[in-house]
Length: 285
Ligand code: PMP
Image 1 (cartoon, rainbow, N blue to C red):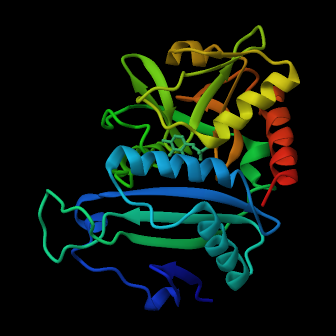
Image 2 (cartoon, protein in one colour):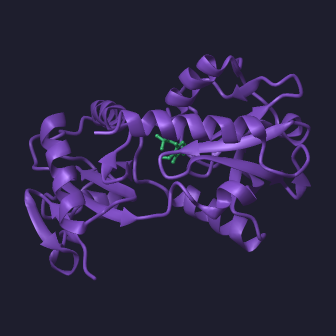
């Protein structure tokens, strides 16, 4: 069945929605995006995603054409029109179309705003019980990874390499240290039971799920160390896991074919996942 999508103020069937070949999102990846999870037809952590979208826009001098209230109204309309119970809503905002290709842009051009829904099995995903296998991979991205742009070719290359190696995803490595996952934040649990994750900087995306997990870990009484960690420290960890809006928390059971801990999903990862889902659902909009 065709989805109904949103494009620049209109709700259209997906086959009817089109964007100019001169759109700067298409020509230059001059665009930002966000993905908000949907559970039981409600938006998860959406205010955080909006704040990050505002920040991405500010950093790139992009104009966000909707307020938070307007955006949530669009998201709810899409959820209703598509009968979405569980999955996500993808949003993309580009610098629009000036009718030709030119690296530099003019101010005041109407941006392109587009959203669509994706049905997905988030809560009972088989990866939760199985855990995922990742490979380490050179982090070849640019130096503003804190901005959520659609310039995702390095992530596509990395994930393709992971699949070719019979793994599920990558952990990206820079100067010997893990930055993050292919499209997630990365964590290990030390033998002492502390969570370790890379501190926020321009080197990683400031995950919305990450922010919530750090607060929840505190409430569980688990210490979070925001510091660099090497891939060797990860091999020797008790547990490893990733977080994102589309996975919440998925345990990592092997890195570069080396089992992590006993090779099964870790207790802290699963406990954090449960508490995240319960809390997020209670606060869903
Ligand atoms: N890092 C990268 C590179 C990502 O693509 C994502 C997913 N958008 C994340 C981290 C996790 O961010 P969030 O929890 O906000 O989905």
